[in-house]
Image 1 (cartoon, rainbow, N blue to C red):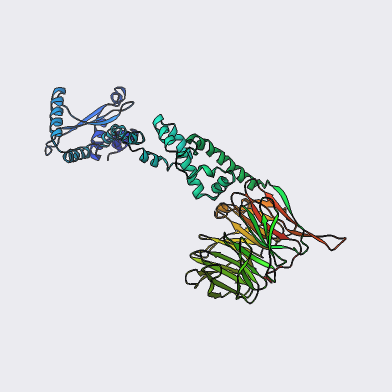
Image 2 (cartoon, rainbow, N blue to C red; image 1 turned 135 degrees about the horizontal axis):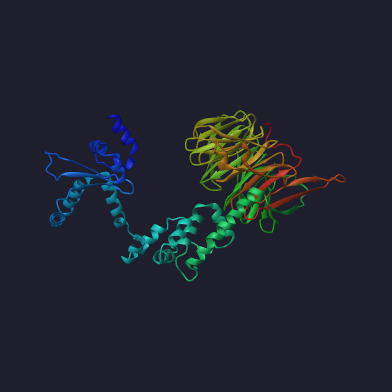
Length: 566
């Protein structure tokens, strides 16, 4: 390309030479521009035409038109006269109308392929409004209201608000379809926090029902949704700020010298005590409803469902109790030393012991429990176990976490990283969170065995830990309960200083057990107050309510570690 041609091309707007249908056209146009006087090109709007004759082409002569300044770039066929164009256009339309739809499509495709880029854009702008359809309005007109409702039911709250503002017909479809009710029902099914709020505030009675006189109109659910969001924001703010109220349970038993384990639901709290008993408390009145006795050692672990309570003790036995009557249904004798932890679910139970072994049990019923397999491999007391359908996870005083197959009970891998014994862990999905006497918390990917994050902040042994999809709550021998941001902890870019959301210092002694859920938090502090003037002791249970969230924990002031040396 000549220097003058290149210089002229660089001085022109890109829309000029990009609008040409080929490189040849671009070069021809530039040569024509070079041949024109510059003053004429600028003063007369810089309009240039170039005609190319192609003797091998039977189509009409092609003329490329360029307009500069405020004009546009266009390519068009040369017209001999306006009258001939109209006649030829009418003839083409008549022939086009005679063809089949497939032939018409093929012809248009061929025609479009011969056009330049500018023409394609013009056709695209012309077709866009023709292709738009208000299907939400059109479907009810065809008697397909349910399809329109089903489509809109997949919207989130923000999109649903916007859809209501489109037109009256869209608003009618949303109202008649009770789509705000369906949105709340979907959240209650999938989010434990929503489910807990529905039960606590008793608007669950208006959900999951067909249209009856008892079901409020759609406007009720529309106004309910922002109130729920406000409650959730309040809960999150309370978690971050640690706002709570305290209540106390007076436990006057002279022998109740500490609580090692507990679990709660909406109605009751069940705790395992150092005095060998299990106590059942009313969650609302905080009164002791029942005391179960039978173990000859401290009750170190427990779990219950709607039928049975299963407990493990330092007397080396596992006992099964009727949750209603409190009657002992079964006693399992297998471990040689204290049973430190247990879990059961869906007909399977796993127990672990100070004797370094893990026992896997099949639970056909409360009275029909048989030993399936004993897992060995740890070199110190196995302090905690957890499992799901895929893996059994165990942690030990030997500083390791071991992973086993649930179906075959075969060893899978070892997670190494803690510098001292591991006292607690929880396992869910791919995530394992563990606490150790090295005062740290570690997050692990169970599939590859990698340590994802180390959380530091506790000053003594991390004794208990629980997490959900938002946060980790840990309790330690320093008497502190820490709330951590789980999502931030899983983000390697998050600074360590941003991970701890809140530290609760309500405890005056060691924290042994904790439990929390999304809908409520209660803080339980059970400790011995030794009076200087006498030998009597007084036991207190402190419940702290963090608005709509509960956290349950137990601590003792002066108590030897029940699980041996870690």
